[in-house]
Image 1: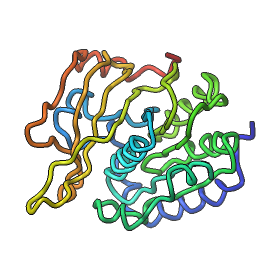
Image 2: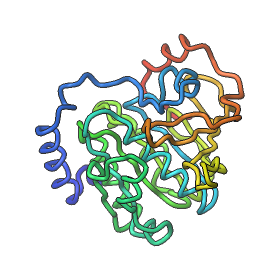
Image 3: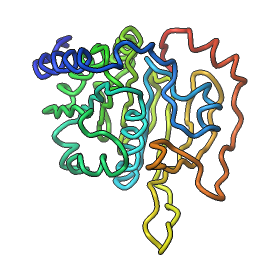
Length: 266
């Protein structure tokens, strides 16, 4: 496989220009990508570990949209104006539609931070992903794939994980319409749409998500959360009357001890 893909050459240069013009480059790298939901972040030791691979699975088209929205909103919570790289195939655009920049702005995100790359096929998508995770200075890289992804075997996954770790890039894998399988991911999640709470005058409520932790290298799986997006706070919170957390987790010291280890296969 080629280590570099032509579309990413220009992308690297664009990220470098953004980094040179922004203030985020001088900030120390955070260890966690926090959601803003206190119990969710605390249970995971601060949020999703940066420089690691995290997988989000969705079973159908409706939940696929929710999984994509959750990953994007989470990534856009990173401080500063570091760009978010979103990689997808042209087939993904046909399945899920094009990403709508005004919609991101309506939710409180900054669409100017989003760099979208559409690859011709899964092979090109994987090549772009290998290049993108090595672009130091990005907020995160989202890789959107649909259905089975045979090219993403344990060897390919380990290559991505090592690239993400070395560059400090958080890699969010959107595995839509696919069944969970062994991988090198730090965490693996099932994401589904949740019913929003109506606002005053019965206006539509904020986006809401049901998350289940399917696998966590730092602790036990099985925990579930409901997270509601708060536009004003630009973070996730707990909906009124919802249980914050269920399921057993390892103590935080064990989580931090395991975080120092390199990526390994499940």
